[in-house]
Structure formats: C-alpha cells, structure tokens
Amino acid sequence: MNGLTYAIGDIHGRHDLLVRLLSDIAAHADGRNHRVICLGDYIDRGPDSAGVLGTLMTLQSSRPGEVVCLMGNHEAMLLEAMSDLRAATLWIMNGGDATLASYGVSSPQAVPTAVTEWLATLPAAFQDNRHYFVHAGFRPGRRIDKQSRTDMLWIREAFLDRDYDFGKHVAHGHTPSADFRPDNRPFRTNLDTGAVFGGPLTAGIFDDRQGPPVGFLSVS
Image (cartoon, rainbow, N blue to C red; front, top):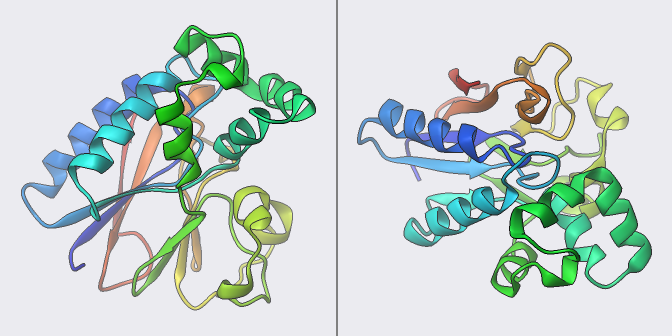
C-alpha cells in the first residue's frame, strides 16, 4: 500500500479522544490513500473501553486491509483472565475493573463473546516496507522473525535503553512518555503519550517513502 500510515498510541478507554483523533486523521488525509494502525492497549483504566472496542471493530470491518489493530498487553491480560483466576485478579488490579464497568458486567467471562473473539485474532506486530509497528517493542540483537510474543507485548528497558537499528523504523507504545509528547528517536518512535493519565492521544504520521514520522496529530 502506498501513501500515509497513521499509527495511534495507547488509548486505554479514552473513546472521546479516539473519536476526535479519527476525525482529525480523516481531515488530514483529505481523501488520500492511507492506513490506520492502532498499537494496542485499547482497554482498561479509562472510562469507555467498550466504546473504544466497538469503534475499532466497526472501523476495521468497514475498511479491511486499511485498518490494522494490534494486540496490546492489556488485551492479552483480558484474554488470559477469562480462564485463569490469578490472571483475572492481576488484570482487574491493572485497570480491568474499568473495562468491566464499561460493559456493565462483573467478570471477564461476561464480556461479549464477539469482543473477546475479535481480540483473540489481533496480531502482535505489522510491517510495511520501511516500518515495524508493535505494541511494546523488540529485543535488540534478535531477528524480527525470532522475536517472542511476550517481548512484543511487554518489553521495556531492554528495548528502550538501546538505540538499536532493526533495519526499519519501529513505531510502538506501551510505556507512557515522561512529558506526554511523542518520543521520536532515529530508529524508533514511542507514541504512548499518556492519554489515560491526562496527556493527549497521539497518532504518528508515516510516509511509505521514509522511516521516521513526518508529523504527529494529537488531541487532548
């Protein structure tokens, strides 16, 4: 696919910001061919996880191949919580209670089946000619096709502490930036700008002809 890609960082139940950011993306694209990639962590902590998932499921269904939703560690925690009591306790402690409240249910098993089945289909990463898109990051020194799913969903220091060239620019989220701004580096860009903690929700704008983002869109 040629054109622009808009990669959206961690949403965490901020449906209000997602709706506004999607509107800004459509206006910025202005009819041009473009793709939207969401980097995971759609649920938990914020007030309307149900709204976020409903919007993303509808958007992806209406634009197959043009909207890509990746798995985040919070989606993975919900799926694990459905069959493991200890995992359920951990998920709820990490914001899962807000997701349950948004659906008006009291257990992960009561989240609508259509939602959890959709979540289970989400890939851990996506790539195009010049970019890798992933929730948390990759382990330096390991080939992309040898990366573990756990690292792609959870890695922090081993990835963040090294300015490592994976051969393509890496767009990721997972770790909120300290100043609520995109952390744009030569080989990677962190798009988690802390939307659920009072920061904006941010999309990086990527051009298929170059690696680093050509700009950002943020709503707060």
